[in-house]
Length: 346
Image (tube, rainbow, N blue to C red):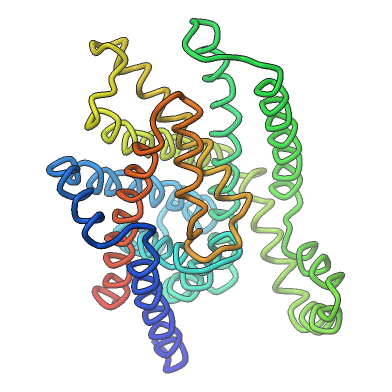
């Protein structure tokens, strides 16, 4: 690793540490109340935190599919390394504003140690696109889950709710169209041109385009070629990203069960509760991503959990509990990700 990359790695490391400190001092409850919530969670903290071993593994597998489709079936980087970079990248994403883009430069920097910079860049961009695309599919599917629950009399459907669902459907369909164009034609060149339309950035955009025109075109070609050349890798990665959110919903399920909320128990009761958990995660992530410019989404995630849980007719206190435990889980995994930046880096 060059001296410049060493310094950048240290910068990312201290950024993550600073994020943890900020998160610790920005809880909406006192440390006494926080401790009470943790005691209430008890042994349930183990599956709540532990399920993210699986979630990050699915995310890493999704990225791994892209790398193999982009570089070749036997890339010169191990899955273990991709798993480590996935966790560290998301740790940095939690710490930075603008929709959590801090982890992407770190991933490119680290991945370029194993493959050339252009393939590293295109692989990271492709995975970031797939990650966001997975969000939209999850939100889109969640609408039909809600409608299915309406059909069995479990959820209400008012004019206001129907209007909101309709807006989300249109929002997702527009996103599907934009993503399809990006996957077919690439998006780096167009993104730089779009940045040039922002006041004060036209000069930078022009200079950057002139200096890196060939590299940007190559990256766009690699982005477009994955969809055209290896559909299996493309759809495998997309399905895994969607599935990771389904698995993520089990985190909320554990907390609902902790409060004795199981819709009557039995298999059908657990299934309904799990579907409720999916809806809670879908609404919360949609709300958080719409206001994703806040670092660590401070206050946004908490508000999303409270609103989504209240919309299901559950108590606001449960929403606060879920948001606090999820914030604790984030801090734990940020620490894990930051520590992984300093170990096993060869």
